[in-house]
Length: 89
Image (spheres, rainbow, N blue to C red):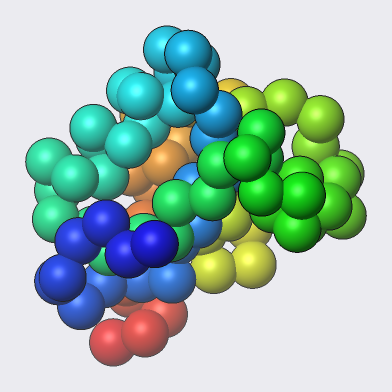
């Protein structure tokens, strides 16, 4: 499911219901108008397999380009997004 119509870096948010850091990560991306794919690992077995393939067993896990971020760290996410934007420019 695409959460935002803006053209932006390739970002995927692996999440699950009731996960406060997941909600914070989603809010962060939406507030910056970053387009991202939202994958609920609890409801979608394929998303859960993708999460495991990334080497993560927790949410939120974000895939920013080819970089994996486990947990929500706003400063690191900002840096990953900036790096991805500059590489695409």
